[in-house]
Amino acid sequence: MAVIYLVRHGQASWGKSDYDELSTTGIAQAQHLGSLLIKRIGRPDLVIAGTMRRHKQTAEHVLTHMGLSAEWRTDPGWNEYDHQELIVRQNPRYKSRTYMMADMARTLKPKEAFQTFFEQALDRWVSGVYDHEYQETWPTFRQRVDEALNSVVNYQMDSAMVFTSGGAISATVKRLWNMPDSEWRKLNRVVANASLTKIVVGRRGMHLSTFNDHGHFEGEHRRLLTYR
Image 1 (cartoon, rainbow, N blue to C red):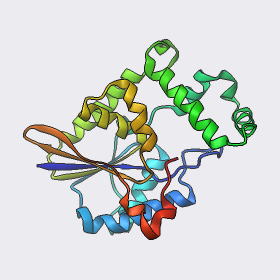
Image 2: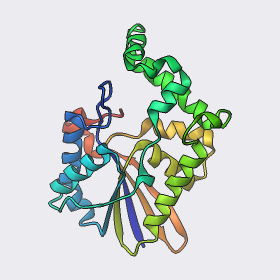
Image 3: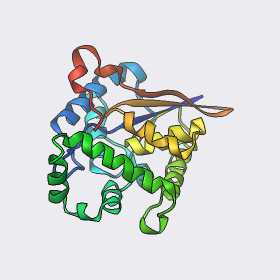
């Protein structure tokens, strides 16, 4: 039996010009998670990270605080969908980040307004009606994440850690639970930063053991709990 731990990256820089960079909170999340993981799961046989900066930064901080060498294999199959493209396809005027932020600010609740808008953008992408407009369609995204997971399973290992994003983790859970596409967004919305999702691989295939475990951000560390 083998175990795969999917680690969502720490909080990125929402609202900044370069989203793909861990925030101060994101770094603290990764460091705290790493300090606990060495006792919890020990030394993984295999470490994989997507190629996005937030994946690599999370991997570096987690592994260093586990007392391990910050070394991993990279696999772009674990990269997130292009959220910028989804935003622009939903509202072409939002190609200007400044315009979008100003538009959200006028609602007086910019984070809530953006969440509502972005979920509409996700639904548009998943619907399949507008596939011709996207560089990567929802089925293509889902297929590459499936292939990335299959490649991990094919390694001869007892345990693996994968540093990735919430969308990829949610797509994996959707696959293992055989959920309809329309339910995927509900999973995607609740995946906490620097959370753990555990997959057990045995003779009968893959089974989801734990989804979105973020108990390490409870109690005295609750200030570190974020979702975006």
